[in-house]
Amino acid sequence: MRSRVIGFSWRRVECSTRPYDLRVECSSRYAGGVTDRTPAPDDVPWLDAAQLRDWRALMGLVMTLPPALDAELKQDAGLNSFEYHVLAALSEAEHQALPMSELAILSRGSRSRLSHAVSRLEDAGWVERRACAEAGVRTAAHLTPAGRRKLEASAPGHVREARRLVVDHLTPEQFAALGEAARMILRLTAPELDEDNAEACLAALEGLDAAG
Image (cartoon, rainbow, N blue to C red):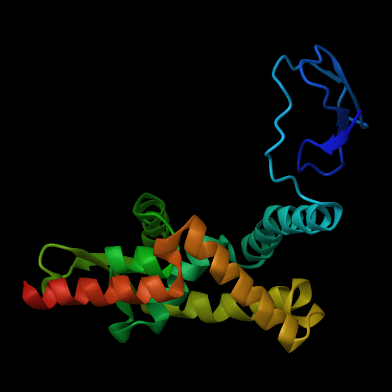
């Protein structure tokens, strides 16, 4: 009887994998018996123990870091991370304004999510939406003076929290490797949000504007 890892949860679950076992007893603190009437596959690329340990750490990171960063921003600034990055993207743009399609790329979010975020930022007086004459019928988001002041007041606490949770615990080499690994995965999970692809998308949008 072989033993095989059957999931990527917080604890390893090891079960009998005899073909056509009607009741497979699993040993863990949260899983009881599992009924499985299908043959155990032999071609599944299961993770080994070292890979599983790293995978669990990665899952823990992606599930806990964003809420931790959000918590600081919400408590100290009344913003969430996405709204903060919308303000940051506008602050770095020429004339502190961007067409909504370009802002969606730079803020790493869908257009629907961006529309909801900009509506809230508009209500607070930090962003304005205006017709973008340079881009045909498109709408542009503009950072208001109040929005600029809000970003400048929010940035120090956000940066301190990013350092406290991540940056200051890694060597420069580790942080660079983490960034490279993150970009590699992002190219697979959301290629339109990768930095290199984002720049290409922005260039294409600018080309359409010029052609129009």
